Image (tube, rainbow, N blue to C red; front, side):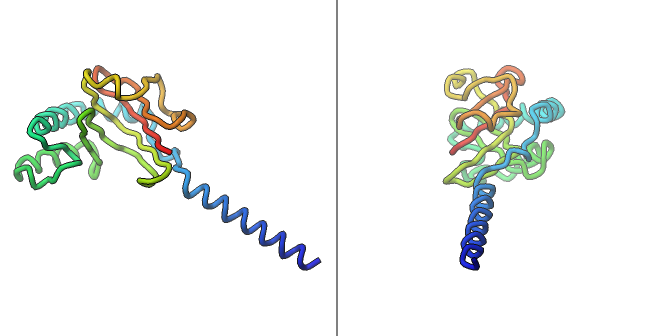
Length: 166
């Protein structure tokens, strides 16, 4: 009888540990802002978003990419300008630019190798629409979709984005 209890107890502990591991590994989407919150933030800081887009695009033509290049490659005045505009939107906001888009990441969770997600606002030049993602009307339930990048249009070239990797 005692051995049955021991086996049952060990099995129960194993299930609890497995459930805890799944919860820790699976990114939670509950902390992500709703689309309407991001859209309201975009319009409340429209000037800052546009200014950062102009600056990042201009600097990219010189081979410097926001979030991917050394800040020291910019003069102090330009670094301060980036910092001022980003902090006006949200202090500590992570902003990155690639060859295809400029991303403002408001919520993210996960690890570099494994499941992760990120949600925010993205500028996509018209020439890059084809590679930007799938356009939907609502991203609040995006985690129920397969892994990928999804967009919700705010206005021309500006989107709420959600990206999930497995």
